[in-house]
Length: 270
Length: 295
Image (cartoon, rainbow over all chains, first blue to last red):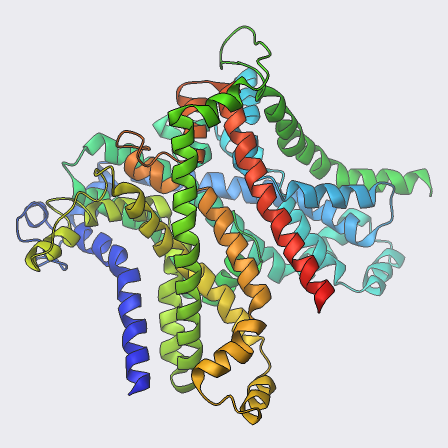
């Protein structure tokens, strides 16, 4: 009896959590007439894919998705290129200023991106780089969080292993990329999930750095779309929202454990 | 140390260090300087204005309103999201013993909003809460309940946004609490039982709650920090309106800085926002230190 009550409450909560997802998919499958009706229903009576067809062929949604891939991919690649060698040096090399650098990384962890937005915007404006992919990607090269996570992961690699590679004549850059990087793969993946999710979903910086709809990332694009259709085409709008949300939700459902690790168990957010 | 070795270290660390200086430390320093100026984006020059920007933020109705709204939002979201996260985690933890598969499915469902694109979900919420085409008001009218204007009623809009904020963050807190629960050694429950704590409540207060202490503190700080940053839902659903009823600190920062181009004033807002977050972190460190001392 007690268990049934518990199960009932948990299921009720789950339905409430799911409601906006169900509604988004449901409206995206409804024909126009079923949306603009006095008798609104949760599920579509005559489901159709017409809204998706319209969203894909007659709107910029595919462009926004492509931009999302370019921007999140560009950010992740740059972050790793810059962070992996540095994190390796912090974990396995002695050099002057190592303690200071690590302290600086911990200090940088305290500053969320909102704090640096105005000066970075001013700098990019000076250079004439606003409204470019560069403006969307470059400022995120510095990732204190990535440096910290990778350093912790590299530090768990036994020093003997690194020394053996050195004896074999491997260069330091090669050790960082061909020994340390693959050994820290679980951490790399957790960081990649964190980074891609954060930047795919970000609205703050794209709203500041770009005004050109051609450069809009998925969330920014959805808002361009919504403001342009101004309530006339909720069906295609919801189809667009489904298409924007789907990649990450599907990735989450396919690898839940890795995702929860990347987003929650890494211990920090935002 | 040989110079060659130092050069290698420099090659390895320089790009990341440079990136940190250019994109974190320099901007933070600049924002603190700009906060004391009247700089307008695009203006040829700027003047030193002392504390004027801070006076405007704390002294004007609009500035105080944004601060107060943010504090209200945080004050609603923290207890609700942390409390619900704990309840769901306790429920799923208990359910996992008899029905592990179902417990995993429910866990995935509760976590879904964390992975989903918040802006797209906010657009769905907007349809859900639509006065005439939305499901919520259709249902409440059918039940004979009032059908309020969730997003355009000045007295209601902040609570609607808070509810969406809770919806979005419960799953995240649940995962953290589940990890905390899994780390409690079962032997402690056996010991509590020997001491006579057989009921669910006494077991909870004697073992679970104290053992979850560090997790709870961490969850509180993380929830507070992300609630302070509320921006996406405000920008998507209300743009701070109606009549600034849902204006928050990060949205005000965006509006003043990048819509009105008042870089000086927006920098002052940034500084206040940053100091509030730092205070929160300091509080966390202080509590943890104290705990370690008294243990």
